[in-house]
Image (cartoon, one colour):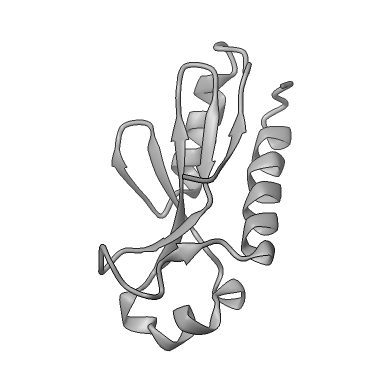
Length: 110
């Protein structure tokens, strides 16, 4: 699995990040896993064709002192479909910046 991994976050800062992620997440299927919706303007051609499969999201997993953004765009309605794919360069850049900004907004130093 391809991912963007941020480690060595102060354990004292993790509650702030988890709260911020919780408020921004589309869904929290299990503790420590957050689904962040991918904006429609960033959907690939196949994802735009498969509107009924959506919403589309990328998963962020949180540990004791780390965050991991999975670089796979998933859809809620199906487990397997041709619209599920690794993030395009634009999708990847947007979500990495989104996560970096979330961290900066919480005054977390990594």
